[in-house]
Every structure is written in C-alpha cells, then in structure tokens.
Amino acid sequence: MARILVVEDNADLAFGLRTILEFEGHDVDVAEDGSSGLATARASGPDLVILDLMLPEKSGYEVLRELRGGGDRMPVLILTARTEERDVVLGFDSGADDYVTKPFSTLELLARVRALLRRSRHETEMAIPLPETFGDVEVDVASRVVQRAGEVVDLTPKEFDLLAALLRRRGAVASRNELLSEVWQYGNVDVATRTVDVHIAELRRKLEEDPSNPEHILTVRKAGYRLEG
Image (cartoon, rainbow, N blue to C red; front, top):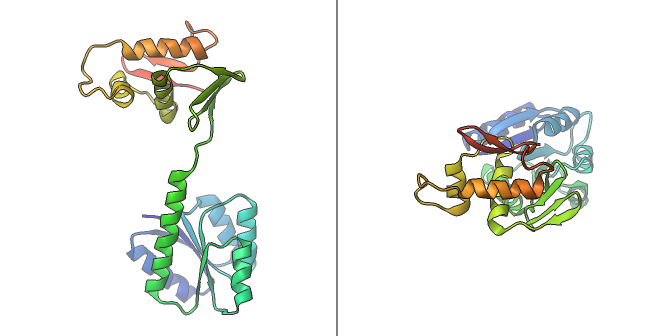
C-alpha cells in the first residue's frame, strides 16, 4: 500500500495510529519528537506524513517549514488538539495538505489518508518527466526532442521510441525481442528481422561520437542492447 510516517509524542496515540494504519495494509514508521520526525522523513521519503503540531524539540510547524524548504513534497496530514482557525491556517501556510482535530474518528482519519494518497499518486502519474542525459546527449521525453551538444538531432518516430525504451531500462539489457514487442508491437517476436539492429545503427550514427566504437548505445553479445552513461 503506502509507507506512512507518524510523528506523535503521545505514545498511546502513536500506537493506536500505527495499529489502525497497519491493519489497512500500510507500512508505518513512528517518531516521537519533531527532530527525529524530520530526520526520518528526509531519510525514508514516506508516501505520507501524519504530523502532530505540538511536539518536543521541534514543533510540527517547524518540521513542515523545513521539509517544504528542503524541497520535500510528500503530503502531510496535521493533527491538532486546537480548534482555533488561526492554528489551522498557520499549518496550511507552513505546508500542510490537510488536518484533523483531536479527538478524531478512525473513519475520518482513514478517509483523509486515502484522499491524500490518491491525490499524491495522481500528481505523480501526471508529472512531466525531466530530460534524460547521457554523454553530451539530452532527451526530453515529454516533448520528444533530442539534442546533442546543444544541437537538435532529427530522429524518426521509431528511432525516438527505441531510444526511450533503452532510457527506461538505463543500464539494464533489452533483448531484441523485447524491443520488437515494445517499440514495433510485433505479435510474433520470433520472426527473423534486422529492424532493431538497423535502427540501433542509425541511433549510433546520430548520437555517438564514433559510431563504430560506441560509448553509450552498447551491444551485449547474444543478449541485446543497453544504454550506458
């Protein structure tokens, strides 16, 4: 399911939250103060943080501000015993995604956890991939633009698809049959064809400094091809 970090100094409440979340199938880590909570969040990169606002060492507000200031974007659900609007607003201003007020029902908590995890997964799926690089080549998968040493390289659609398939494996070997199935949608991958080899040769010609002695688009004897660098 998901990895969830609970930052809560009340041992009984922390135990209850762990039990509830693990029953739902999640992996749960617990930290009992703000400093260890911040360190654990940064080290483990949880899918969701459940964060009490009133904590020893560092308050939940401080933890939030330091997480967001460091670029961590995991969703954070804050827990607060306070009901004053300004405390909730301060939590949101510090980077919280949602809140529940103690005491809360199990059903309410789980509903908010599910909603935050769904939203986070959707945002991840919709995120635009960053350009990939190897050697002096940059590949922008989203725009299907390839540059070498700052100059745009004209690839055919299948050449680009083949390059993208190698990039997705990044160092792992892709067999000819796998590439024929993935890039050309061959139903019978046992068919004899030089299609992959011809397109690999073209990629080397366009992207390698010395196509006859490639440094990045490599042949793995009797196995297939892999992208190095």
